Length: 188
Length: 170
Image 1 (tube, rainbow over the protein chains, first blue to last red):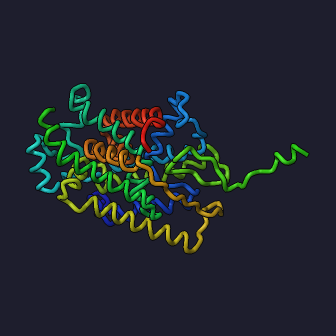
Image 2 (cartoon, each protein chain N blue to C red; image 1 turned 90 degrees about the vertical axis):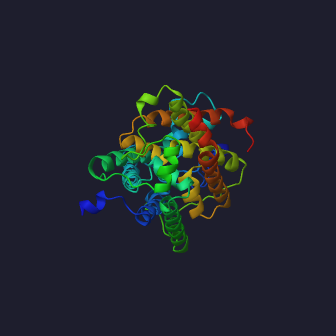
Image 3 (cartoon, rainbow over the protein chains, first blue to last red; image 1 turned 90 degrees about the horizontal axis):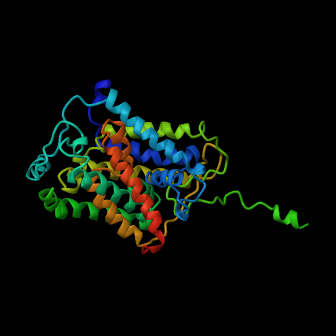
């Protein structure tokens, strides 16, 4: 049993479980699935700075922070006790593409050549952590949601603006990987 | 006389939300701050485990997706949307109530240009960090502590959006 759990889970199992989060939250307490809101609540709690956008009753929405703390704990549980002993299987074409960009693939879920503390104070860190994070935080709020709020919850409730947003998420990602990345990795 | 008029309560279904909160709490019943909210942490834990086990938090999986070299992420998101749609349809069809016996509330989204501009910005960031907001938390939990910096920067991004909100096209 543990062996099955330790292997990487197939897409249909993961997809179904993620999809079930929608009714789970709705039926547990009329809560709407959406994770990027947590970033806004953190702003509202820690640094509202009299900005109207952060002045609301965050205590009412605090369930969202319990949810994301749970996600972090789930990450811990999975990494500590359920992790896959075998190296991650990445599509060969991607491995080749990344090698051309001098990104080596190692056995972890994240490339150590990028996501390590050594890069914290150089240009790589500035782009991958600071700029990347900023775009995620600014972009999701501007768009009114992220992959969970728009792509999963929004599409599940047949909202066409969410379909527009999802297409734009993908467009941005394709542009980064195919147009900006080759140039960017040369500069870094 | 006057005071009795003022005491008429507004409909309990009308809840004031933060403007454009896409993940609102629509429950009418009061909840205790810690105990009632723990169940959402439990859902979060299960969700976080799925994120790691299906390798959705992997930077490589996001690269594969945007390079069209693997079906994995498309399968995950597609299945999730399918199951989500079916669940919402069932809830509406059979008028399934929440655990507190309340009707499930759904919201219609209004299109605004932020969906496009912000969406593209998020897409650019998604491909760099290899994470949407959910996986950010799971990456940190699973031991990639440097992602804390990414998360702080994402919080800063949200804050700057709040600051500039009135001056941005929507």
